[in-house]
Amino acid sequence: MSESPEFHPDLEKVLISSDEIQARCAALGAELTAAAGGEPLHLIVILKGAFMFVSDLVRHLPVSTTVDFMAVSSYGASTKSSGTVRIVKDLHHDIAGRRCMIVEDIVDTGLTLQYLRGYLSGHHPASLQVCSLLSKPAARKVEVEVDYTGFEVPEEFVVGYGLDFDERYRGLPYIGVLKPEAYGG
Ligand code: IMP
Ligand code: MG
Image 1 (cartoon, rainbow, N blue to C red):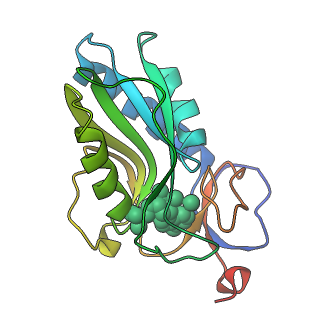
Image 2 (spheres, rainbow, N blue to C red):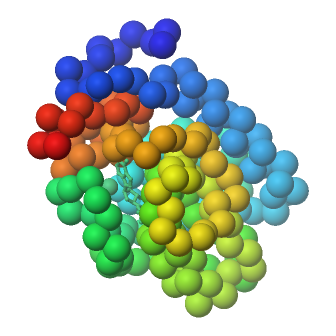
């Protein structure tokens, strides 16, 4: 890994460097821009994990791109999904007839995304796609479609670049794997 930010002592390893993330955001932005074909895209960003990803991604999207936020909770202070999804903050803007893109930090079991796809489809968007920074295909409990993926990661608990463990590590500019002792494992 070529980047310099200090390697956090709670981490076992850095999985994806800051440089790799930045390059992937530019490439994803170009892909989404081409696919939108000049039509405005409405981003539905899932807080909190996706806040850093969207801030980099949106810089590579046309100025017609609009952004709304939702917050859902499915994890407590643990590394396992509870399987129960709760809306903590709902949409601010109506999405009926709009081309929408859910922006997620990570698709793990797929339960959160399955719930969100169902909930948002009920609001009748013109189209509904998903762009997730990370995907852990080996951890799926339900089949969900992810239209754009930044990186596939192994079935390990990752933190950094927006992703937390117990609200910590979100500010790291790279993605790493926590040492088991850092989450009491
Ligand atoms: P899912 O419902 O199991 O797919 O999990 C979705 C949410 O769980 C993500 O949006 C994350 O907030 C959280 N999550 C899943 N895996 C990880 C991980 O490895 N690190 C940090 N958060 C995770
Ligand atoms: Mg989280």
